[in-house]
Image (cartoon, one colour):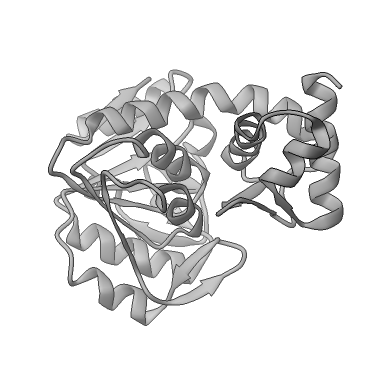
Length: 253
């Protein structure tokens, strides 16, 4: 079984069983557990699965079997570049926030072997990725778990934020525009993001170019409330120039 065949078989198993175990897949496909974890990480990066300890859970409503391989090839490289750059910005002694979403999960992967940093999150995916990282401190926020957003939300979540110092908040979003600023499609996500933005010393939006120029119903903050936008080289040039005129650092990697 070659790599493509194995990954298609893995996707088929996820669609059928909804949850998979790394050790069982390694035995089934006659590969190492490291190979299986690498396959699952790639699926997590495009929101097909949520990584959990020892395996992964299939995200209902995510990419379908025929489209996932193409999407992975297109988005993986760009998302990994963004994640690696964000991780490089984190210095020893920093306290950071990682949002829910696949981009921040990729940042967590890039930080997994770092030391002497503190990470605050309400993302189940980030928690699972960093749960075995002995060199950093992992802090989680209370709240009610939301299956769609794969994280914890609510009044408890927002109250927890008051107890932390955040040097830099890495924020994902489904929509970012000049007029609308940062937006969301979920009120519970909007509330947590607003509280984080009030608390963090620096607020950094991490978005690929497909999210720029898009609008959503719920407004999180004005664009000028962001300190930095980290995006890829395909981001709209007019948007980049306008954001820079507002005094926002825009980095294209």
